[in-house]
Length: 430
Ligand code: NAD
Ligand code: MG
Image (cartoon, rainbow, N blue to C red; front, side, top):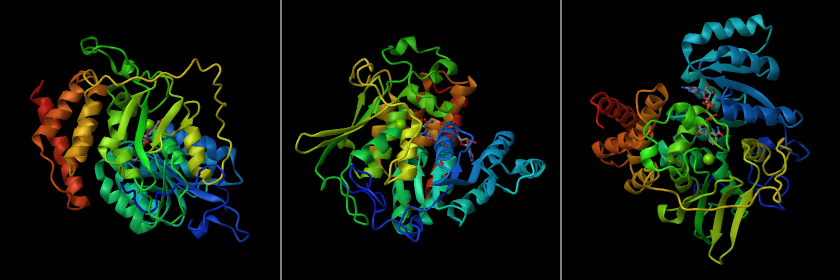
């Protein structure tokens, strides 16, 4: 089990100061951590809001130097008024003029840019040392890769980019000398439960005596329901997550358990763990964010209230610790911790993700693309909830795994899989 260079836990209790191998830019002349300049990609989203909340709490440590969003110009400009970044980017280039005009009207010195190239350039550019990759879906891959290649501190929430292009992304992290810290709460928890390793060394999970990684899952809003009771659930019901407030795409993924499936694949790449060492445990309270089990029988877990600001504060300040604005977890009042097996018959997406991981090559890219098509159709009201897994399975069946050649191959596979899934939907495959 091998994880890539660059993914190095430096955060265990007792570690303080900047590790010797951390990028020099993170120290000031006196050896203290310097002000971090942070690009928030997906600034108008749920993770973006949590990240900016933490950044705002520590103006002495963090500065939001680049803010990027898809189309919501007004929301982006409002964030610029508050955070005064050097650069604001709107990914949809048709909003370029609107962004420039509104920044000027607001009397801001923030420069405006638009389009995917602007995202890529900013991810790799001089205006930031840290990139928070919080764009939703495959759209985040390009800027995430650019940040990895440029050797940034990469705070990774955009799990779809790892699922789509795991090996290539990890290669880019290693070759670029990037420092990757997971934001997904489970992976951030695992990262915190791994032992400190001399920075710059390759992290090898088997060598570290890790027996299993246990990913916890809330079970989503439909936990305990049988398959036949889910035929006519609505998008709003699927997005009413019992524990986490998130964007609509990941909320549907949580309702189908595909989110956990994507996270199994994410854990495989981030921690170098084979599929049979990654297990999913339903934990409805969402207080234990994941567990690492060691060969000696020890299980180390990270606990806390379900609030993404904990993971963000951890990653932003690592290896130090700062206030995240999250209330302390009251264990006495928590009502106890419950664990159960996932219902794999009702929530078939979990096994589809394991299948794609085991098939390897392009299969996870196909899985991710079909899932994005299916979830978008469900949210638009054109695909029933139970057909999400059927459509993904049919797309996987239609596109046998191929060895990954390069990024162009993956992007082509992504497009093809979307076309196959759309066609199957039009043909009423189910
Ligand atoms: P969201 O829908 O709330 O926000 C998405 C953000 O991405 C928005 O700022 C939007 O403007 C931007 N965006 C969308 N399409 C874009 C495009 N084509 N180009 C550029 N920007 C685009 O989503 P979220 O819940 O914040 O999730 C973001 C990512 O973080 C997802 O990959 C999700 O799986 C992951 N994640 C989220 C949470 C959570 O608690 N929300 C937890 C773990 C992981
Ligand atoms: Mg998660």
